[in-house]
Length: 320
Ligand SMILES: [Fe+2]
Image 1 (cartoon, rainbow, N blue to C red):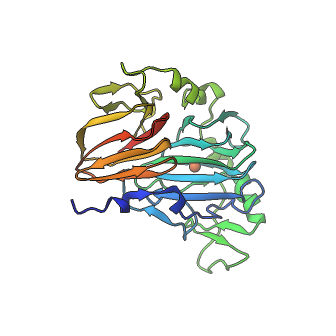
Image 2 (image 1 turned 180 degrees about the horizontal axis):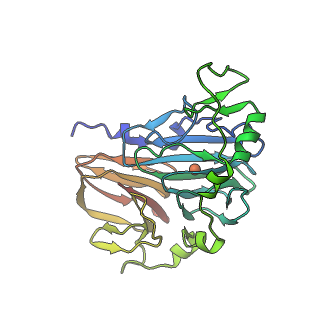
Image 3 (image 1 turned 135 degrees about the horizontal axis):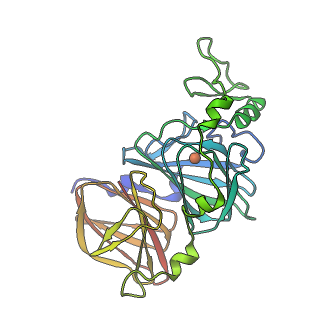
């Protein structure tokens, strides 16, 4: 095989962050935040955002690292957004004023937020927090911000133009042929959906509940399907969340996880270690990922994997 697997490996320490990835990036509560685009172009409004693996996968993976009480302002997406918490405790809140409800997620928790609703999130832990985000489709479209977020951002000099370009007016003039994006009017806001805490809890899977579930006969090897069925190693696991964002999200965990038989896929498949060292064999090569690393297997190659350290391990699988 001529593919260099290292070009498909995103070691966490090699990721290059944007410090002002979005229009609200200079506001208190949002300015101490780093944004990573790991797979696919993502949704960053920073034209200079570095993308680690740009190839279209049918989904996008990004990351957010934030100081305590920092995170993202209220915004909506046209595609599904699934959060994987890696470090810290995060508060997710939603609704046009952020008052419709809130949930708190910790390490290992997963939440899939529906399209067409305003959501924000902040790290409410005492140390820096990290989460990864999977967004549906190759082009996840533009972000829609609440009018309050856009107007607060404008006071810091940050504006979005009607072609969705982000301009820091302290550094650059607005081009004469462009105009500032109008905030949503009241009728437009009414077209967004509202959800109760009970509704959103159905889209949340907590780590402590996962750890109690037994999905195979081997106590040291468990498979989880968050979104869509997970077919792996002869198992078919039913999903815990009923969304259909256009990708599958599953996980394997335990002290002794080993897929011995090679399997082939003509779809993109991405491996993300939350815990543990994992060796992924791909054709005649192999690669090791540790916590926070991400690897994308080339399509139409045979692959298998195993955990190579002796402690508990947990790895997500994202499939196109
Ligand atoms: Fe988002």
